[in-house]
Length: 396
Image 1: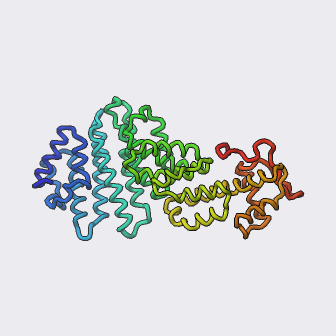
Image 2: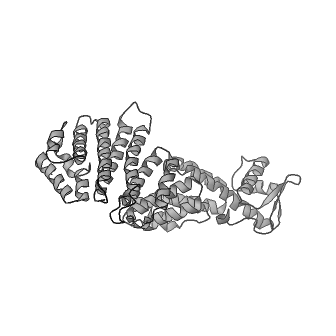
Image 3: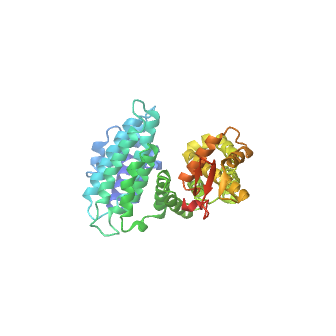
């Protein structure tokens, strides 16, 4: 805590003179203890700040103090606080452009952009009269201005380049784009990292977050192999002390791996309180369509809130595949009567299915590559390939 405004501004000045970006970022953070200091709640601090600081840093500090003032109102004026934070972000862009071959101010940029996202979320929650996602999208535009300056800094050395700030900003933008459901905007950001010559040099926590979002995007694009690789990297490199983060990664990693034919270990699911997937895996392995449907119905809200409902629904094709593979194993022939598949469905408790619907299910499995063969409608039979009639899921 600072006794007076002058003490606070003097500390900010010392951080600038020492090129101490971490300290400067802390002094501009809405999570630091100084935000509880009522002496800093000033509506018009411009003249006071100008006595200590030069542009554009004076604009950053002025805007920050105004943010504190508007948040201290009763009720808090989130919209005006957001506007001032956006002004601070604009001033940071000018600072980045002004500092040639220097990147000491990146922690300041991180803090200002992080708080901009938090305030945009607060506006979305508390302010009326805006289209949902509008303020978050405006915040993303502000962050993109910072990103462009960082991405364009190609002349500085690897130690001094502002490009080292790209991944942190991209992760912030990912959080916004996923929240407002504009995943197509992630593509150029991913390309920027993939084309970066020192992408392994970014801090590990940033790489874990990046891989988590890139893996989720690959999942939504039905690129399951890439999703498994990225999400597995995130899970493996996320420290064990962050159990909630590891659990979040598993919520997406487990069903994607199940789509590729890998069933999760019960001990792993127990550790992260995800036994829902163990129940699904048992039903999937047994080809028990009715039990699978029951679990999905019971856990519907959980699956929807996690954003994996449609992904889990895709697993139903594998449940059908596994059930029909048992029919093939029993009959030991490559010409299978369609009535046998209907009987198998009825045996596991699916009583509301017709022969025509059974035909549709098998046609979809053939289209998906989960069965190699064709339906002979004239003879009401499924004719399967003599070589690998039920291909491994990894190859489908």
